[in-house]
Structure formats: C-alpha cells, structure tokens
Length: 356
Image 1 (spheres, rainbow, N blue to C red):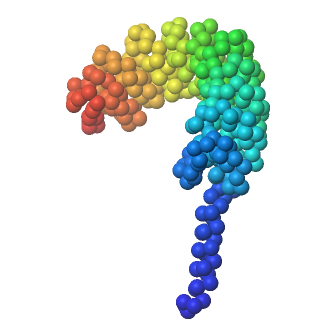
Image 2: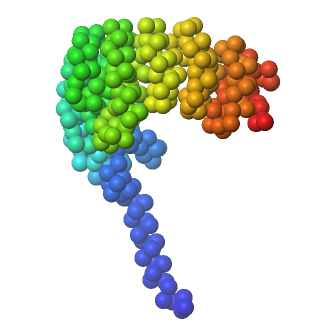
Image 3: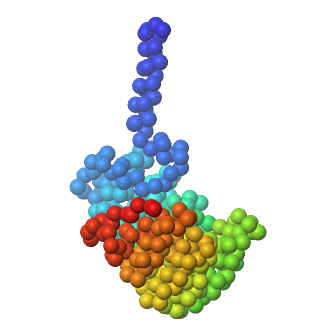
C-alpha cells in the first residue's frame, strides 16, 4: 500500500487519541462510573489558597472538578462546605461522589441533610458514597435516612448504611432495627441485621438466631423458590451470621453450630464461631468433621484452624486423606492458621503437607 495514502489515516488516529487524552473524563462519562478517581488529583496543581481550589469546582473538565473536590476534602477548610454541597448536583456521577467523599472528610453537620437527600438518588454509587460520608460525620440526625437506606436494592449501599449506623452508635435506632428484622423486604431485613451487628446490640442475638433458623431451610431448598427470594435469603444468612459474630453473645453458639451442619450455613457460620471465641464451639466443630457433607467438613476444618485448636491437629491430618478433595483441601488450608501443626517452619510460614 502507498505510504502517502496512509498518512491521512494516521493523522486522524493521532488527533483522536489526543482528543481523548484531553477530554480526560470521556471514559467515565460513557460508562456512567462513579468510582473514587483518586488518581485525577495528581494531574492538577492547585494554589495554596483554598479559594482558588473552590473556583476549580466550576471548571469545564469533570476530572478537574473531581480533583478539586478531593483536594478540598484533604485540606479540611470549612469554607469548602457550601461549594461542595452545590457540587453534589454536578451532572457527572464521579464528581458528585468526590464531593460526597470530601464532605465526609470535612465532618461538617451542614452536609447531613444534602447527603441524606443523596441517599435517594438514582445512582447507586452516589448513594453509597453519601452513606459512607454520613457515617464519617457521625451526626444522629442522619440515622432515620440511613435506616431507610438499609432497604436499598444495592448491596454496597446497604452495607455502607449499616457501617455508618455503627459508627454513629446511636442506640435509639436499635428498636427500629429490631422491628425491621421482621420486615417483608428481605433486603431491609439483611441490612438491619448488619447494622445491629455493627452496633453490637446484644438484644439482637435471639432474633438473629430465629432469623437463621427461618432462612437456612429455605436456602437448602432453593430450587423451589424464585431467584429473587433465594437472593434475599442468602443476604439475610450472610448478614445475620456476621452480626452474631460481631455481637459476641455466646447464646448464639448452638444455633451457629447447627448452621455449620447445613449446606447453606456452613459457608458463613464457622467464621462467626471464630469471632465468638466460645470454648464449646471447638468440640462441636470437631464433631462436624465427621459430617457426610464434604462442604461442611471443609469449612469446619478451616474454622478449627482459625481457632488454633490444638486438639484438632490429629483429626485435621486425618482429613487430608479424605476421599473428597474439597474437604482435604480445606484441611490443608487450616494449617495456615493452626499453630500446632507439627511441620510449621516458623511464626508466619506454614508449608502445607502433600496430599497422600
């Protein structure tokens, strides 16, 4: 092919690449992404005067506006609160997220209401960023909005709302959360369970145990349910087991041990037992090593390793010969945590034994 004919094509390609680099935010604009683009702040130099950075919130380049918001959050100047609140209405999703993050860093109560309104925005990333920011601010005035956000359809939003309620630590919301455990909306029930765990609310131990006893049989028979119902029950199972571990009430031990013996519960209950640190849990987990279900045997083995249970060394070594590779693999993983393996090489290294 004649090189002279290629020259215009190459020129067009170079112009296109240059335009894309100059635009900066084109990829995020097309994808609608709202992730925290912390790298953009390294592309711009801001004046030492905060007013100059505030003016940068009005730049045409969305990357420049996002970088300015991050910079204002890091500087901690209260003069930036009102401009950042206005930036929550920016047309670019990730700029709004940057403004929400910065408001959380500033911890100014004036931002509570605007951030609470952002929890109802159609963009889930902004809702998540707003919930995180409200948790950093720590104002009890945000609790009502965060309790409502526990029923959000997006899992990350529910998780951040629960963590925010735990950070705020207002026990007055516990009654509302305990009531929400009986809500018809499975997402709200899971979010409430998660929040009660973050609050370390001991009154929630028994209701959470009843919740596990309700959803685990349904998950084990998930073939008879709609996909959405199974998804909600799995969320409740994960949230309730995690909450019971955080609360640390040993009254939950029998229920969690029962959950270890079920196909659904064995994925999450062992870790909750590890958090409880109940001496009775080791005996019950060792008994679970003889369960006919290889999945139960495997997760129980890992839990015993995390508990550093010396009495479990011989049963775990025997489990390495399990005919099911799943259980044997988990028994080998237990060696990474168990301090009593006879072949440990040091405090941080645990060479795994070869399978027989």
